[in-house]
Image (cartoon, rainbow, N blue to C red):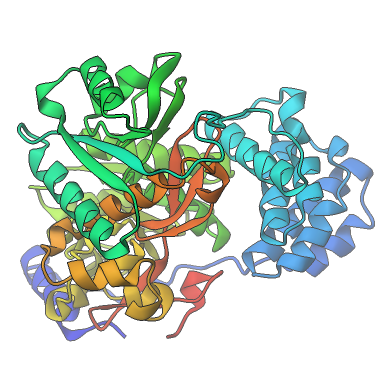
Length: 501
């Protein structure tokens, strides 16, 4: 049930936009019922081998979306992949490897990821996903990885001397200070024998920073924070010391030995939203992103991930954050005659800050699209309870870091990663800066694991579950929540929109 505030805003919109016009009853959009995987599997028994393989792949996809992972895995594993077209072989490999990893079946992951050796046409993010899963399977089976990112200079050692190189002046100084403060607090709460030293990155060139760190006998560096500097480093063959950069470079991949990259990537969130929407059974998405560089980058990440799974983008709207929300929603939802036309739209991906985001669902209500699922990134959540304002976001599903949604994410503050530090920081930090605090904590935890890179993979961090890719970039998986009565609440996995909690 939508809240009264949302209804009030919808009524207000109606008064402004339809003065003097008689309203017609909302049209009913016919939905195609979900296909029966059992029926598809029965059909496959009567089909020619090539068509049967394709039909079984569709059945496996449906079973996976319905949460029947065991049956989905059995079906996908039984497909003779050589009978599939090249594009379907890639789809099969992505599905089987995902299911096999979830069910701890590394040999099936290796079977699926053999498509990497066949030089099939696939997008870069598909290749990267399969390579990461292949690496996991090889490690699980104690087989050597195709790409080594080991750090022999730290192997067998305990990390005790860390230099943090962050700017103390300039445009990034406020962000840097927040991250550094969290590191210091976490270092104090955690105790131990780690020596944490700080250098003002705004006073030195990159090479001078490395020289200073080596003179201080540091085992590794945390930093830089500046994206351009990270880009410069990742284009080198190697860096002088093991380095955890606190941003991602602009190159397609990181080329430098000893360089690792970690940050609060909005692109990661967009890709996760695309995967979640696909797993929930959606196939045709509309999207709304701001008309700026940030919106372009995040929108492209969602678009590429969505299409890599076989999804279709029906409408892509770049909106002006200072302009009417109504205009953007009309375009995103094919509004005609003041009604949304949803015959080719299953769901909406929304990238927006809170003030703009809160206006989108009421506007959708007005255009007779109250039940269209909305998938959003963390950016619409301010990180503090604002029940009255956030009622207009009711039923929107979004992801955020565990520290921002403790009740929805992991069942309470006591179960949070690094809960003692969380308790120390939560009352003294601005809600808008709390994600950066969590980032500082996770950067510290990643750094002390540099002597055992395997310990980074799957790390349950303050900013999500962290995964290390073969090129040294660290990615996050975030928990999901849904606004209910203006409050982020838990949702059921795997099918978000089936939750009634």
